[in-house]
Image (tube, rainbow, N blue to C red; front, side):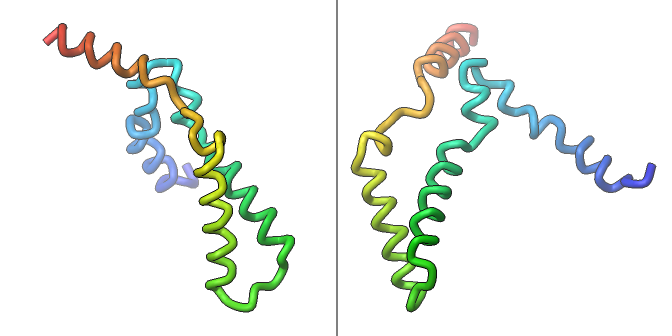
Length: 98
């Protein structure tokens, strides 16, 4: 095998990689992916490309912070990413079993 170190790394981290399977199946796609973060990063990237060249780092930071504040204040920032009722039910079932 040419990639012994890579194979060892994968073999050692299989359990960690599959941790999401311990949660209810309704949450699996939300835990595996980071679409919300990626969407926000794309939005920030799009806005910074419009400006092109910033005079200093603070002006870039101010633009990013303004966008984050705007997202946090809108419905998009208040949207629930996961339905926590599935986790609450699992927690109740586990406490009853003990």
